[in-house]
Image (cartoon, rainbow, N blue to C red; front, side, top):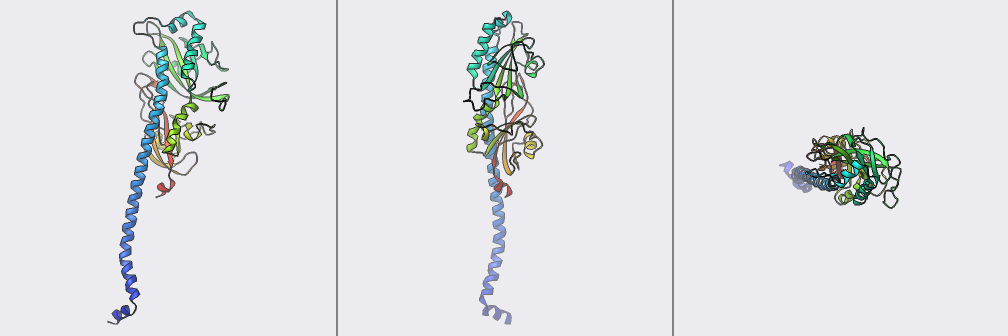
Length: 329
């Protein structure tokens, strides 16, 4: 009774006690609801990034496919075995006709393709456009994978990245540097019997190819493209400026491990700039090479080159969004 009277004499105690009894479960429920909301938001963000990666991969795939189709069409031999003008030029070593062929393809595919190189059946350079300080007519390409990897059964091949000289890139002089990173697209030239008559090689300018990625910046903070060995090929954020990070090995980073391991989404630190990221991954599938094992690259989008009847080195592109607050929950 005295205890009750004490409470009534100090009614604020009753309010406090009741408030605490009500507030404690509300806080618990509120935290649970907040955690659930964060989980749903994170899942939605990852799903959005995965879709962004898929769209970017499709864009890169189409860009590479376009080059493959043009090169394949230019080097194709009719099923009837009727010699084409290219075959006749190779057989006769018609320098004028050979130069006209590479000049035509170069003009058709410029500026995305930096250089067209025509090789004979032994892997020697017959003609190229534009001229190069590293590859001249007669230069031996027989030991290079861009030559040896194509055959009657595997008529096209997409190489890994390598550097070549770029005396005139045709891109307003901004990137007319001595070395340019390219991807080689090779196409088999068959003679009337189906044997090797030569190889057409198109060197695709990786930097110009990367400009197609900039559209992804509307729904992601950046897009990284890495090759099968985990090396950075390009970033959307550096599509119009030189990127000192190109060539950086990202395979041991958590993001690189997730991407190269076949993940579609991941939460990891940015391997270049640091900071938590939500990442979507997709693979590029170019029709110039047989479909490889799933091995995407890092960015919220990834790409892998693939296609029946040919070979290629796997490349990946990842698109990522800076969402540290969401990751930290």
